[in-house]
Length: 509
Image 1 (cartoon, rainbow, N blue to C red):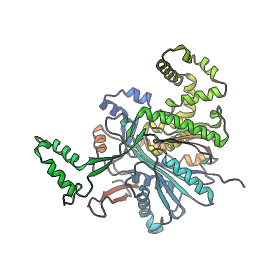
Image 2 (cartoon, rainbow, N blue to C red; image 1 turned 180 degrees about the vertical axis):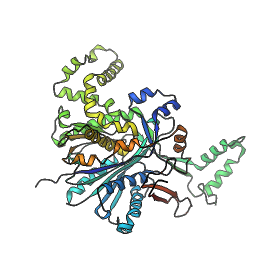
Image 3 (cartoon, rainbow, N blue to C red; image 1 turned 30 degrees about the horizontal axis):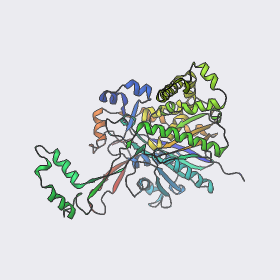
Image 4 (cartoon, helix red, strand yellow; image 1 turned 120 degrees about the vertical axis):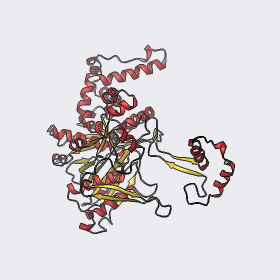
């Protein structure tokens, strides 16, 4: 008995209504806008408003998906969320999303309409939603009639003036997963490669209470910590201050969690390159596909894109391996007038390594490689250029970008298989195939990805900085019609501390 076809039936995207042109950020930071736009493909970054977070963006994407497909709450067996922007250390962000959806549908379907819907967060940096997808595909395949929603929702935020700042972005992508999908059938063979790495992470930082007090004292005019009896203060802290405050309690350290990461850009790129190659090898081993046939096995390639041109800049090595395997390497070298460095020509190993790196850059500038990029990779880049990094949603935004462009170009894509290269720092890659189904165009027409990006509000640098520093309490943009928003966070220090309340705006306010 043949295994059932399972895959992605439809997709929806939510992008914040605010964006900052990269040109404005470049001017403020003294950066070369030409290098950012032409070199990295960065044009705009999506910016979350004051009352937006991973939960509201996710809920908005799921709501749009349900309305488009006339899905009722009781039909949905799962909402599995991939995110690295979790709102709590224990309570899944997916439960906040479920709460919003349940309130929204309560009048029509009852207050417990999502009672039997399984929700969970999956976290592995930018690949968590792919993990959720693979899990839900196997669940949907196991029994007829199962419908799940896979969701990616993240805010990619970096410290201001850091080298990651201009790659920021935000948004959510939601997908219906079921048997006999109308959009994409997903190959059950997933190639995977996992190695421990500290290329990008968000550690729990520990600080002593005394360190905090010293820092505050030194910020005050005309005062230093020498003006205080810190030994006596430290003793009081050890005993507990006896007041209801953040410095009270028995713990001598406070744990701080920041949404901005610790990262090593070059190391992260190396990890990305290594993992996708290893995952591709594993995919071939599992699927029986052979090296050298990449460009015939797949009609297009989509990637996790930390910035829009990441894939085209680092895929040249795999591209060369493909040409060597299928006998086209020598013709490529001759046609593009390239000279391959030879180790025998250099006494200094470091010089040889430098020449090899220069050669790889020349490959990316070769006419043949540019044609390859234009056909296979570029269709998945244009949305990233206008949004920025979506972390867990980035690879799916690239997939939607590719499909929408194929629809606009009236390409007959039925039966084509798209190669998906996902990556999450820490680090892991997964590679799989997604085959375009006969009714794909009907589904893609409802994406409205380009339209959504065209109807956003440009903000000033001052507004961007204020939002980045979390100085705003009210939204800068008017809420679009039919959007969830964060109403408040309970700050009373009791058993309701940190409880988040959300609302829904039925019309622009």
